[in-house]
Amino acid sequence: MTANLTQDAVVIIPGIMGSELYDTTTHKTIWGLSGVSWLLKAWTRPHGLAALHLTDDELEGKLGRIKPTQLMRHSSWTPYLQGFEPYTDLLDTVHDCVAHPAAVLEFPYDWRLPVTTNGHVLAQAARRHLTTWQQHPAHDQARRDRVDERPARLVFIAHSMGGLVTQAALDPALDSDLANDTRAVLTLGTPFYGAVKATAILNTGRGAPVPLPHQQLRSISATMPGLHALLPQYTCVINGNDIRHLTPGDVTSIGGSAELAQAAADSHRQHARVPLPGHRAVAGTNQATLQSLTIHDGVVETHQYGARQHTRGEFIRDRRGQLKFYDVKGDGTVYKESAAIGPAVTPLPLQHGAVAADRVALKAVAEILRDDEHLGPPQGAPGCGLDIPDLVEVGTPLTVTLTGVDSLAGLKGVITDVESHKSQPLKLAWGDDQIKATTTLSAPGLYRVSIRTIDTHTVTQLVLVSEPGIMQES
Figure (cartoon, rainbow, N blue to C red):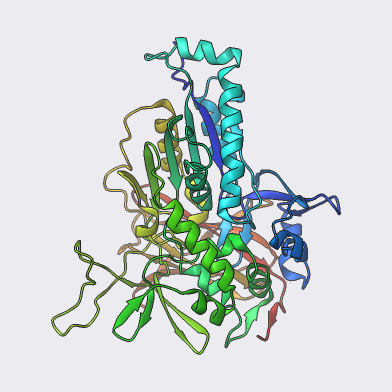
């Protein structure tokens, strides 16, 4: 039997913090070392991630200090953004669908930099990759095994911010023919209209004590163009009985950079007009997700609901003229309507960091590569929502809360040490009209909480467990 393999050239683009970064001046990997011990040291030491700060030269566009080396090959963790599963399963799926390993390009990039900058690099890399693959001996054989026998085109598989980088790369101003040479784009949890969680990151420590890891992320992000690129671009700031866009002045008041916010907004307006050829989107659903915010004296209050508009553009209001709010949920980071863009959308009950590793999402990847009919998720598979803290200390109870399920029947929960692979069951029970489980961990490390529902769908989230004493005053 002849294998059903694509003749196309595939480019895989990770999300923010999904690429390993190497400092060419110190000759050290500054993000992405394997091992949980490195992760704990990086986030729980005051200057553990100091090398990620952009230098004055980098802010002025003088690049080269940092070299992206490869896509993340192991589980990682970031405050607020929580855990990121490795890209190994995604890579394996793609390699199973192509005619030769040379048809696959991994595109690690310096996620600290502006989306437009990385889009420019991606456009050049994708053009070189397509040309090189079309000249490869395996390419002609792959063409002969396909019905249409056409030359290879490009297929982009992009996770999270990687979708924004892909959209920037397909701007005709960079390469007028790249979009024509692209057959399909599959985005996995891409925040096309940004994420309110980015404002919470910039506002960390305003008015409340926070753990050291969260303060470190805020410090890194304050001058990071990549984080500003994730700021919400839709109307999300509640102001009395009205709602408006986030402004550069707002960003300054909450702890970010007005200049970077304006540049990100300009980039969004420019690239939002760029169509994505053959676009299919996987959007995470059912997870509690921030969707709007209010700002009082420089302090952000986030909300798990937002306003919606009629097709004619007016916001939906009740009979008294008051704004009506809706909870459309999302993947825990990106709310559904920010990721569900395009003619074909696959909604999956997943956390953001696990979207690129889910078996149903990987099935969508295989289908789009083989150019098969995209069937979407199995019917009647709602899964559940999963809500847990992103960080706890050793000896402190960890509470897992489920949403979207109304029965204990068929539920199974486990928590697994990512490094040792040792698992222990979670005892799920009703409490405060919700299904919960509480456990206490005795050793620091990175742990994966997995919940399997009666429909056999599994939802996962990573949590970092640290030594005591990582709280610090704002």
